[in-house]
Length: 195
Image (tube, rainbow, N blue to C red; front, side, top):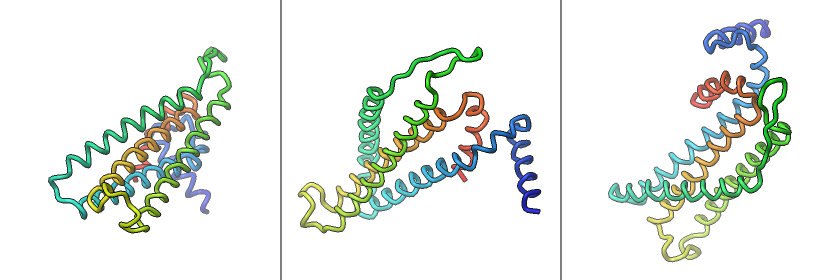
């Protein structure tokens, strides 16, 4: 009986998103949608927490500094990340069965997956470092990193790392899917990640 219910739900989702001719796309959804949802949830939670932390330690007149600092860290982090990835990624385009495709698609998909995994590890370790840093107490922190500035640094870091995670997740999704499949499935990824 449960199998019948799953088939009905698949058909209804296919009807909503216009995927009736592409039922094979549902085979990849259980693997990709949770990653999009987890990265989106982690980003929203960390950004919300860091904003609340900032507002608890500062008055509203310092809000512009929070957003400017977050934007600057995001910009510098993005430029550094693009430079780093650009040096490590080169690929050639070939024509296969009349379609332009990247040479060694599997190698490109593996490289994108590795980048996503390393960025996930880096972000988890950096958040753990912030927790360890804040638990050491005021004696351990440098003088400029006081109770007002620490939430600013945490917000800026969360904004920068969160944006990089979102960008890399979408890049990973576009790399592991064929273009036509990605065009069909990205609205579903966005919808599921938002829910």
